[in-house]
Image (cartoon, rainbow over all chains, first blue to last red; front, side):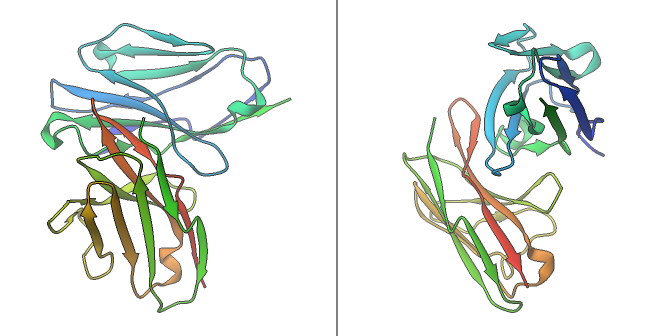
Length: 116
Length: 113
């Protein structure tokens, strides 16, 4: 069973629009971590955020914000006032207590295209 | 955060040959991993590189095809053996830094012809 679902395969927006990338996860562990990574066309994977399952506070970092809701098993990522440089594939990932929080299970990724 | 480098950054190889990818971390880390990302796909864990012992492979990956070494706490290699076009992928190494944050190298783009 897929543990991390990113239902949006590709999203296209125009610069300055806000965009939300969805992530739904599944786990039996009560303690786990959720992550978002950005993969620009160059291919490297850039760490964006880590969230502990006990911390449901929303987080904001500049134009980025994350909404974690355990009730719906979702960890959504919003980019405000998108820019062309935000164009990339974004991956949501999960690490669980049963693996010692070591192995990451990735979603299939959402490709974000921001046009000028 | 740890800085991770990989060599080579890309290569084009012939079917039947082998390629060894190197991963270097700028600080000692307890856990290192190797992932594969096939074209247009997500990342799949190949194995955990254990220092001083054999790597732990995920289902679908075997040591004969993907031998891994980890001689110390900052370095690991992944060999892709007897390559076929299906092995064309990006191979990424990663390392965990406390608390549970996993950082990735820039990846090695492998094309097998």
